[in-house]
Length: 130
Image (cartoon, rainbow, N blue to C red; front, top):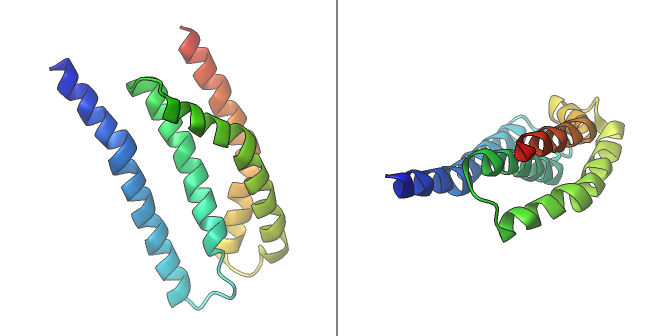
């Protein structure tokens, strides 16, 4: 019974949630195209979805799964590459934040990463010690 529970957790964490994220991304992308948004932040939105999805996957892995090499690669991305990507997104979208609600949200999500990610790591570190 324990084995099947672990398999279900793994499927949800590593397959279902990323698929839901991709579906949401493509729906928002379609909505931007339909709304004729000037220079829609398609790539910025993809990186934001990828990054915050990575944080969610990390949280779920710590609480419901086992640590792996893939989780370590994800943490490497979240610690070293994501901050660079998010600061570039925030900078780029700052100039365009009044263009549309999508640009504004990419700016907010880019800047808020620098609060959300450290808090997430501190909370996970606290719970992993107990």
